[in-house]
Image 1 (cartoon, one colour):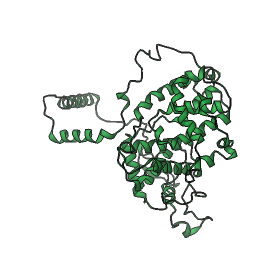
Image 2 (image 1 turned 90 degrees about the vertical axis):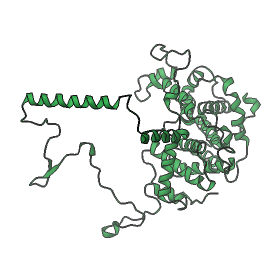
Image 3 (image 1 turned 30 degrees about the vertical axis):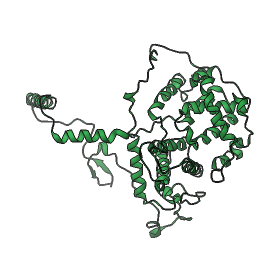
Image 4 (image 1 turned 30 degrees about the horizontal axis):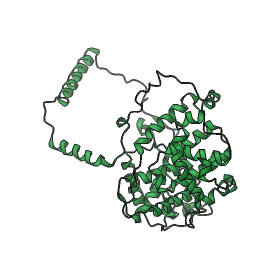
Length: 414
């Protein structure tokens, strides 16, 4: 479906057009496809004038931290200050005078802004993060979970805030709830096309060695955009690539270059198209990239459950398969993560869904049971010949070959 090139061996720092050997002299200045080296940026927030000295060094003309001397008498300075304060007070009165009519230009611009914000993400002010009947954290102090209690002295674990952070994530989930959009908002895109796109995004994540959080955020951004803006199927690959590009900037220390993305798309889209799509996606999510994703919930639940790395990897495999399933798009990420971990725990006969795991996730077993058959069906279904990236990925020894584990029957899980 997509025009793509083999991504294996792509140099993610400067794209595929880098030369094998370092060049010297004039040849190093004009290499096709190599971005020019940019000089170090100056701190423009504290820009000051410089002058050269005899020894070639530069020094500041004035010390920006040193107070300036003035020859104006103190009484005149006080008079000037009082005049300025009086003028500012008059301006404030003029701005806040309710009797003044609003210019027509301002009226039209405000109405235009309201129309433009129809498809944007809801803001935090529209949600109450304290549930009805629940006391605020300052009033109702709760004891730490046993896992957090053990990590209390670890500054990087922030044990006293860990559960509050994930409770906050769970409440933010409702800001990014995705409705069913295929057949309504998107009439030319099918679940199969979306599955092919997600499979390709997994391939990008694997070959560029990106974090898993980057993959999950990219899929979430893609679904959010598709639920709000009608997209032609020819532009679906551009949307997915731009979503990975945005997510990389948010989650990676060294995100891939834009030339890398144009290359893996076989140069079907140019650099300007990528930048335009990037801006469009960011506008539709109101530049809010702090989206709760299922992968972060899974890691938290697995830590509290004290799951082994094999069990966690198996749950990650189930969770990654869920990204391709369109019917799970409207489900809460925290609940999908809980169901994936529960299935993995049962498949490996490791632990039970009780105690601190219920407290950490906020879900009883009865609440996640409706999702268990859907996720278990993904394990039983034979992978499509075109959609084997996830299966091959988790069949590798690095991922403990969890994709080869025989799944349980649904009746054994419920």
